[in-house]
Length: 41
Image 1 (cartoon, rainbow, N blue to C red):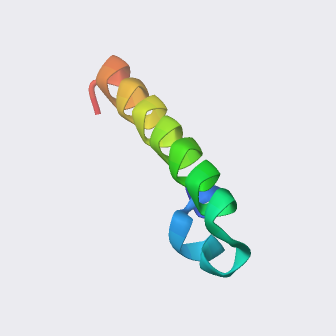
Image 2 (image 1 turned 30 degrees about the vertical axis):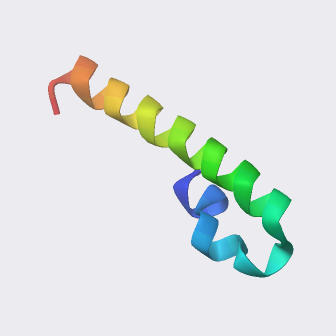
């Protein structure tokens, strides 16, 4: 998911795509941090 929504990968697609990707990227990061915390990683 990180590779799919990383804002740097979508630089050529326009501002609205980048903004959406940044929001999704942050959601993915938060979810991953939550999983790490729950599993004690």
